[in-house]
Length: 153
Image 1 (tube, rainbow, N blue to C red):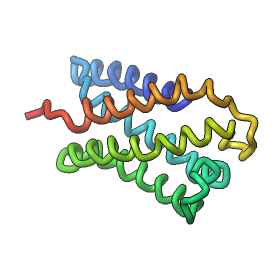
Image 2: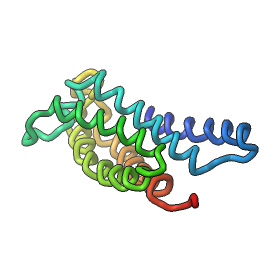
Image 3: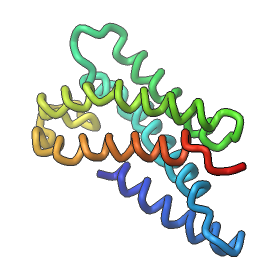
Image 4: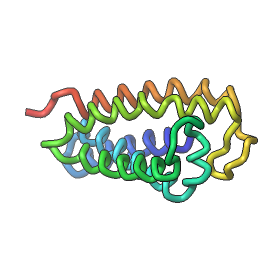
């Protein structure tokens, strides 16, 4: 839920700032900046809670801690890539793929009631999917709308 708030508040604040600075709200720029901030925020979790996040990954996948660090680095690179005009479209496409690939880990964590911050099995459980799956769709659409879709000439 926190990452959704970071995305939403970041977007609204960026709309306000761009409105004040450019004399008109820059919706596309605000959307990219908000997604970049959200990705950086999420990346922090990968480095702060690697053991708990590793528990999200299904058992058959090896090198869990290394994978958590790698996905944190990917999120940082994507945050930067969204803000660079030459890499924006490719970054958006790769983010869509990334968001699809990580959904099973979120489902796995939900099925095991995982709280990735504590590494315990007292998390919210299946009720979390009512939030997480729609949010994952929002992230996919957001990455498309603000990263892949061509708007600026």
